[in-house]
Length: 594
Image (cartoon, rainbow, N blue to C red; front, side, top):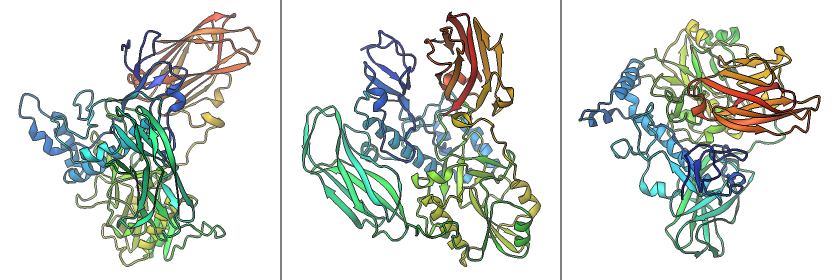
């Protein structure tokens, strides 16, 4: 079988294609499901008339191991690693190397499992393509493997663990969410992806166990036929969680009866709240809760009180960075402008703050929902032995020492800072984390020793009033929005600029947009035909040709996919030329980042 190219436009002569996007159908890869596994790409793959493989999935970086430097004994030297290590040394995090490798590696494997299973749940997907299992030291370093460049294991997974979700036959779980309340009935769907040479005739089994391997619930299905080369649904799981009365992590196992084939997923169960209770009145005990480092906060600290500072809306570009649950892609230098700079989080899981919020030593799916609008603060000037309670792992090209949850002694007072937004009491994870923090702060364990003065904290926790967009609807969070007839509604973020030549109406026009390098997303262009002249045009975006059809309304939008390769140079180029009608008219333009 032959294909003209990889990861480019599907051509009429292609017999198959490995790509990440099909014109007119949509993306063939990505994180479309959020914190859930009850989704797939069948709506895209099933509409293709040739086999489609997903192009170079994953590519989630793992923090480099400094001990790898000594492996370069030939003509090649790991100069990049040496520079990264020197920056880590300057910021006091060099000795945390093993922690950073473990935390970023754990998230790397969580994300690979999440992605790979999405394609196995898609019956029409012909397969996946990996950049590699091992790191690639070119193109800004793609340290995305579970093996290093010498094919040595990084210790973040084992062959047995990896085969559980990537093998000839894999059991799958369609899980609506990872976080549950104990008064909810637990439900999920089972599926089997089977690409062996022969059909199977087996039943599925499922088990739910707690952290001590105590059985919570279990069940089996009657045997059924699983055709070779299929991915089919295999029954439902349903159970009562009311016996789980404290916050717990549970493990779900789904396997084939009588065979050594099984797969596992973690879920988190938290106690439900009384619906009639005022959700805003979480008992604070002796803790003052605030979201501002204002006069009242300072007054209470000076009096020797305990303060919980919810700092998700505080800080400036100089003092903090927005953090993401999802790690950045490939490399910060080769694909800049992603809007994220972290690759996981080190969590002090044995710290008493987490007594009522079960967590491992790294971020996992129970953290995902509290990452919305979260931020971490730069503490490069803090002592090397000072360790935040929750410490995001900064990209190794930057190597900042970050703190998302940390505690300080401020004069006679005690301060605990949380960069996660915990105000939404309807969010079970946010509610439980806040409860666990307050339980800790009201105990004798809360006794921070690292001292900081009030002026430095006022600088760190500055409040900057955010500007609100005048555009409503789906483009209110756009990177760029241009209203060609109303400049007051036009806005741009992240230093994005644009230029149109000669104008928004004409037989030919060219739009050049200077944007953050390496972004991915969509370019939306709205063509107007208010006098109903039957306008159509030939469009060229980043060298790819398109046709705008005859408009059946006064305004019609076209959507064009922005690949990283399109924006790597920081410039997007769009051209339009009239085919039918007196001219073309563009009324609006928008860019939405993924």
